[in-house]
Each structure stands twice: as C-alpha cells, then as structure tokens.
Image 1 (cartoon, rainbow, N blue to C red):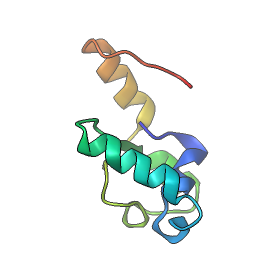
Image 2: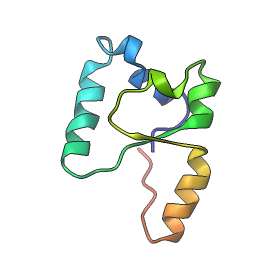
Image 3: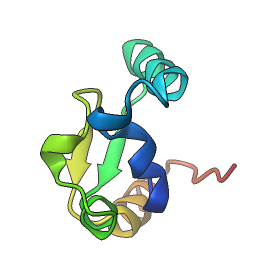
Length: 79
C-alpha cells in the first residue's frame, strides 16, 4: 500500500525524479508483490488515478484496504 504523500513519488510526471523508487517497486511487483495506491491519497495530493504508473492497483481507501488485509492474516509493516 502506497499511502499519503508518498503517492506523489509515483506520479508519471515525476518519473525522472523518482525513477529509482518507481523502478524498485516495479521490480517488487515483477517478483510477485502486489502494489496498491490509495485513491484518497491520490486525490488529496492533487493527482488522479491516471497519473499513477501501471505498476499497481488503485484502491478506494488505503486504511480500509490495510484493515481488510490485516484481518485476512497479512502483516502491516511500517518503515
């Protein structure tokens, strides 16, 4: 889950600036990690889902998604 202001680092328009981060996330996706972007965070940062790269899924609400996945047995790790 890519939350809050971190979604700005994935905006297509800023790819050159954050290429390392986006490419690392794409590599994780290729290794089987599911990447998800919070739609609320996208809009709160003045972006739209079309501004995100095609490396992950946009979900309606990140915290709801985290709660649902945690309930299903996934761990919620914070950096």
